[in-house]
Length: 193
Image (cartoon, rainbow, N blue to C red; front, side, top):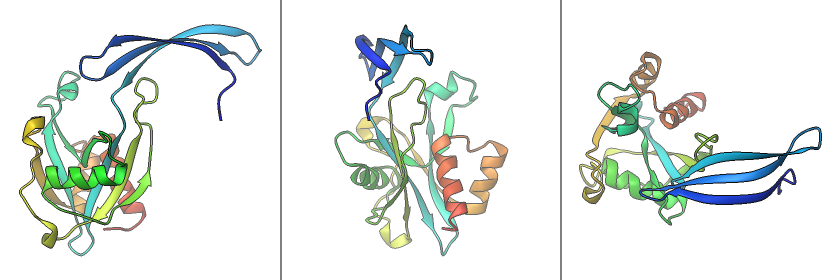
């Protein structure tokens, strides 16, 4: 449903170097009925998908570890992040995206995935919707070492962790990526592992 308290939206592209940074100027109707002009910047990087791979028999999960420059410049000493497998949709539907990213990043070829939520991760400044999935893996699905697509300079380390250890790593701050925490908590609440 369209919000009738918003009108006269104007968009100015501030940057389109990697993704697109837009500046929006618009009229917003306040609760008293008066209109005010507001300006907001919104970063459009496209929508993405992420998946928690779990093995209920082994009580394990597969996560990735890679360097993330934005965290490095914001106080993450070594810039390394432990995360669930994820990627941008790039024209794929979310389920196909997580299947493709899973094989590229972790080396597991999975077919059955279940969408569990689709949050906005930073709604004050980023347009992205992140489609979150879970999927069960086993050793028979391993088709490569993973590590990411060479043309994407990802340099991903694949980690298979005991589920309880992964949850402990959330408590200690060793895992501090929001999508990963959300999916680990989903797995715990729903007794997947």
